[in-house]
Image (tube, rainbow, N blue to C red; front, side, top):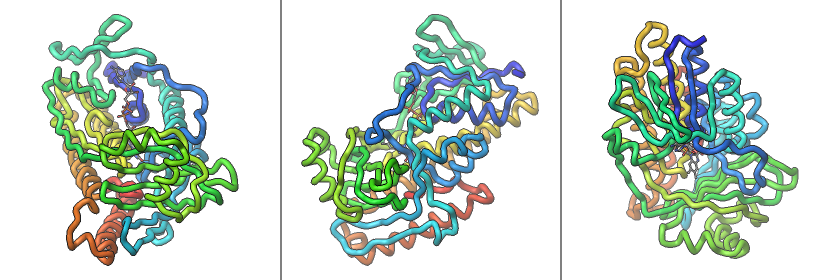
Length: 404
Ligand SMILES: Cc1cc2nc3c(=O)[nH]c(=O)nc-3n(C[C@H](O)[C@H](O)[C@H](O)COP(=O)(O)OP(=O)(O)OC[C@H]3O[C@@H](n4cnc5c(N)ncnc54)[C@H](O)[C@@H]3O)c2cc1C
């Protein structure tokens, strides 16, 4: 039953849907409506053309709490260990789930399966999901935030979550700036298959242009292993690489990745993503709260963006549940202050770790050039990961992605 307070979520991507579920779970009396500009996709894509996200253990705990994990688990690939190496140098390291005493270091979920499960759960929890409905402008001057939609009409709410990705026009309307930090590199993202049984090993190979991450996807056949690849390359090489014939592309990838998984049997469609970091200078104005990629777009190769959004969805849901219980207006700064402090703290932590990971081996210098120094750096990374996983139990800090 609604207590009269309304949350409007603009954007039905993975972040928007996750916030809807977190709010509907923690504060069931809120009236939650979500608008998505595009129709939700149905059907199953070609398994070689899917996209995947690595979920850390904290995200898995949240998905369990939101009653989603049991339906998703069979669509995920468990990461049992991570092999870390530095291209052109000797030395590598292996971080294992066993060593950290956890069932897996993380799980790679196919985005279309995660999206499908989130949508079904949101509807089951009574979220009013409307698609395709596009928000065309924001109304900031009235007492409560409102939006205008393409089918005509104005929707008013107590709190509006902007989960529509990086919509710079809206930021301008709200008077919010964006800090943009490009790296001069792009990521080529695709699925690759290799012969053999999937054993759940992820690979993180550092190159001068950033990491090359190869993440295990769930198996479709016993004799073939499928992986999701995020490969950092310089901006000036991206167009040529993307348009190579399959065979030439496969040999370029094999050359960059090596032969640890044997000969590449096939690759799927390639997509390209600029490697940059975008952070909104503020996240809240006049009843509008930026969430997901709208608030922070991170270097994709570190696989942290969605994990951070899930953590923030949980924090916001707790804050709003308290406000509802105490009869406070959910859209006012007083109700959101604690959330904003916690979210900013999380974001600083994750962006710092992500930047470190993305640029660790970019700089050539005596410290990072010698092979033995790779293991020195890893000595720092591994205990950090260990500590973050260990902190899960007491919920101090979101656990880093298995690769972070
Ligand atoms: C290559 C790559 C790999 C990644 N890997 C990982 C990973 O391993 N782990 C991880 O945690 N994160 C990862 N991320 C980050 C993660 O994918 C995103 O953080 C996550 O998808 C959240 O996106 P979002 O929902 O905020 O934005 P989007 O996905 O951009 O969704 C925004 C939605 O809003 C809708 N919309 C836009 N305008 C309007 C409007 N006017 N009205 C209504 N609706 C509108 C859009 O149609 C869209 O559906 C990766 C990102 C990339 C690019």
